[in-house]
Length: 294
Image (cartoon, rainbow, N blue to C red; front, side, top):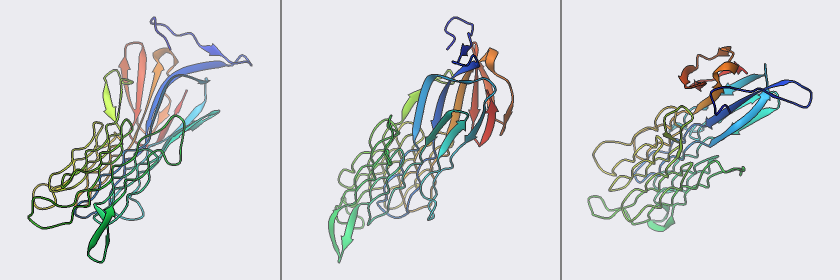
């Protein structure tokens, strides 16, 4: 883009003017299936790139995914996208964490954290598995796997007990839960597209006798299995996954951010994005769906 305080419009093979822009597109974070030793929600898918070119005057339609909830069938986060002309990018919602006795759900970015174990006739037979990240697969990858649960048999008030795995983040996998301790959510990815370095798309922490912390980038912390403050919702407009626990929590909604040279910005938008200045650039931040003329 313009590195010296001015912009030169590119031209396509047909002589049409081109606008250059950077983007950050983050989907909604995963929710969870509530219960003790619940795994954290996976982060929403994240894709970012610089130096993209599109024909001047192209109308881009922007969709911002909502966070997944604790109610089926809406536990997986919603997709975010920017589509118009010959440009089309979609990021996929994070998978939800699962409760005490089950595997987690795959996510477009972060897979959800696994529940503590698969339960069969009073015996804990295996750890609940974390969901796979970046499913279906894209290049570059949108995220990472969720962590497995800890299958220690539950005994109320005892120092050991089951714990859920951490949700996968855009930058790192969720942690497999140590004995009785909720797994940490995987960290997200740091971006300075707005002019300020900020993390996005962190995984939610798992529940356990000791709660797991959410990953950097809006991941919610998990809840303790007994008493104490409940799990935390993923932070809005970061794509953070929900923290695991017995109380209903949602993943954080997604966000779409475009960075355009000030001289190319038309000011024609819908959906009421926030527009800020960063030197010679306009930063257009969509926290809800809308459109922009390039």
